[in-house]
Length: 143
Image (cartoon, rainbow, N blue to C red):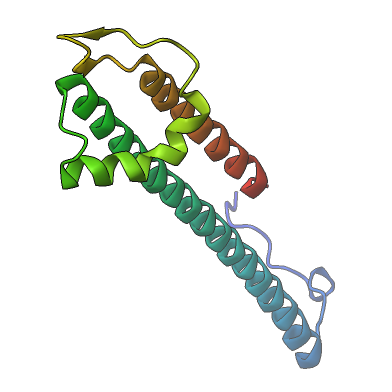
């Protein structure tokens, strides 16, 4: 008994010309290049979306820090005529105005210290808005 396979016959092979082999090789190479271009575009697309997200996190983080500083200054009864406190109040004012009359904030120590509930609502609202915007960016950039 012979365990070796039978040698192939000439009619088992399809004969290709050198031109046909070269053409098929070029087709495979073009397909590979197209796949690589698609991967590169997808990676660039993802990188752009990631940069947008980072920008949103940075801007909202800076805003949250500003609002938190304002909250601490009001809670501790900082002098509003002080330059630092004045800068913080002026920078944060446009972001606090929509919430300024939402609740009556409790005061203590002769109305010197203010527990500004409206600032806490603003901080929470901007956080929720940030997550919604990031979610929207992810939807826009998803494929």
